[in-house]
Structure formats: structure tokens, C-alpha cells
Image (cartoon, rainbow, N blue to C red; front, side, top):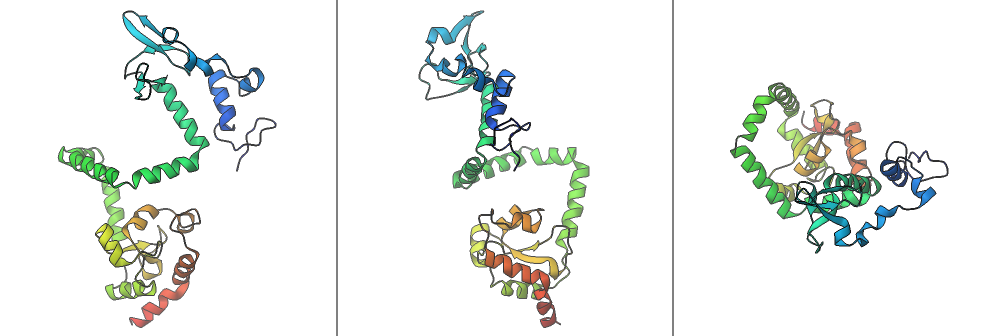
Length: 271
């Protein structure tokens, strides 16, 4: 973990070699130590200003004062986000540009909480259904066709890669014995094949343990659709680590033994 390069600060470095606190001070005032030297400036308490002080009419258009950059901008959805909780004028305290910068800074300083919120949001069935509808509408409106026309080289490369990785140099019987070795469970998360088919509508995938490895049995692991997609091309031990929510020491030990040589017993049985 890198440390903030400001003398005396031991917080984790987030951007430009500085922690979140010092970087925010640097971005806003040009000096990472501004707040420590002079205290928080007036714009930190602009929420207490009266309506007349934070709003004014310019060229017949009502403007609002952004609390962050202290600039008056037209009070509309082009410059401010709507905010129902603001009963005064219905708009956010910060302009869109500053709100985006603040949101990015918060994500940098609260990475674990942000990831947790994202996982919870994307696991909601309503979000998944909405995504399916948006994807269907995109395809029906010719979005996929247009993308393929603009990306012929990329599509050709992808198809060649898919074709190469779909070819497996082992039999159906050998893959069946492979699944039995893992008790007919996903080698990563431990879900049964019946349950995986019920949830994802697919049987186990023949996952390449090492992305650029062989198509033989010595590089094959039975995986549910969800694990296969999430693992993608990440290195096996980088993805399947203690930070992974489906990680299991016992399953790691078992899949390691399989890749290290237990697969040979299946090949011997089938010969």
C-alpha cells in the first residue's frame, strides 16, 4: 500500500501520490495543505445562505450558486441534478461537474463500501430484468448490427478466439468423470449442476483454468455460468482468492490437485 507523500500523513495514497483529503484540498484550492493552514473556507457553509444570497436572476434566467466551485449557473437540469429532498428549489447543492468530481472522490476513499453497494444493486432482480429489456430493445433497434458493421476487425478476432476456446481435446465421457471428481459441483462456488441449470438455464461450462492454457483435460474445470463469466481471462489464483465471495480453501485445494495431476486418473479410466 502506498502512503500519501505529504509529510506527516500516513493515510493511503489515492490520487497523484496524495490521500483523498489532501488531494481534495489540492484540487479545490491549489494547495494540499490549504485547509490545514487556513481552516475550511466560507464555501463549506453555503448551505446556510438565504435563498436570495444563493440565487439570482441573470439575463432573465434564474441562476443558482454551486457550493463547490462558487459559480452561479443556470438553475436547470443541464447544470444541476434534480433532488427531491431539496424542498427549496428541487435541485442539488452542487453543479453537475462538481457533483461528479465529489462522487469520484468518495468512491476512491470508500472503495469497499462502493463495491458492496454495487454488488447489492446489481443483484436485484428488478435491475437484471431492466437490463434484459434494454438489451432486447437495443438489438431490435439495430444496435447490434450497427456495432458489428463498425467493428468488423474486432468481431473477427473475437470469433476466432471463441472458436479456438470452444474446441476441447477430451471426450464427453472424460468431462463427465471430471464433474464426478468435483462431486458434480462447480469447482469454484460449489453449486450443484442441477441447481445451476435451474438458476442459469445452462449445464456446467468447460472452463479454462488458465486463460491461455491448453484445451485439454489438464486445463479444464467444471464451472457454473456465473463463475465462468466472472473469472473471464483473469489469472486463476488472482481471481480465486480470499477476496472472492465464493472462495473456499477446500475447493482451492481440490482444483489444485486436479490441475497438478489428478486429471490423469480420469484419462487412464477412459483408455
